[in-house]
Amino acid sequence: MVKYGPKARSSVKRAMHKYKHGQLKSGRGGQGKSRRQAIAIGLSEAREKEAKVPRKYQS
Image (cartoon, rainbow, N blue to C red; front, side, top):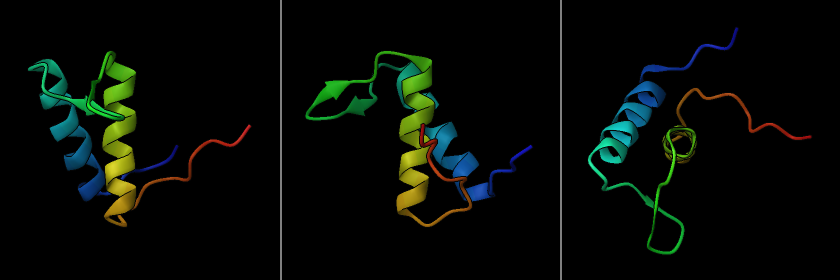
């Protein structure tokens, strides 16, 4: 099982908080529509901050 670092966890937590309050932004001014999208946005932000996050899934 993959472990996420504390920075990644806090980033996802912040994104989920914004999602629940209807303030999550996705793309060009759009709004995050789902819980999965909120988690993906949080992990993406954590990757930008070079936190310990596993690589994106490549099919």
